[in-house]
Length: 166
Image (cartoon, rainbow, N blue to C red; front, top):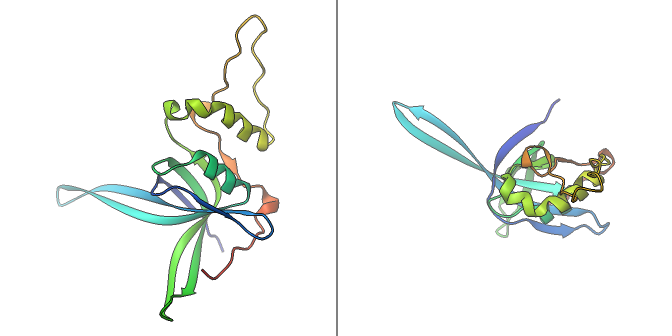
């Protein structure tokens, strides 16, 4: 079976991060996506709100760089959550467990964070560009197209099982 979802949208609230007893970061937020279409000659927009959860290092990176309104692309898997509410009723919802993300805010929004972006590149084990010649002043490295780097959760951390109950 195959379970993969890709969403692009804006965060609807700031990240809420917590840590499990074993020290694994768990960050929760929500993303709003929209679809524009025309129906009977009338332009319409449909908005969908989806809860998303980051685990491990990606939770910490998301908490550090993302805020309410941040534009982001997430790839992950659809997750079905079930719980019993305070009145004893059974509740459920679908959410997305994020496996990788890309921050899509404009270059000017992220320019002040470029030094921090280098750290994300280093965490992924990627090489940083070579420094400028000594006679030229050092310039800050900018991620391609002015974007903050993509962060993919390391495979060894993806085996973490999230709690089933709320």
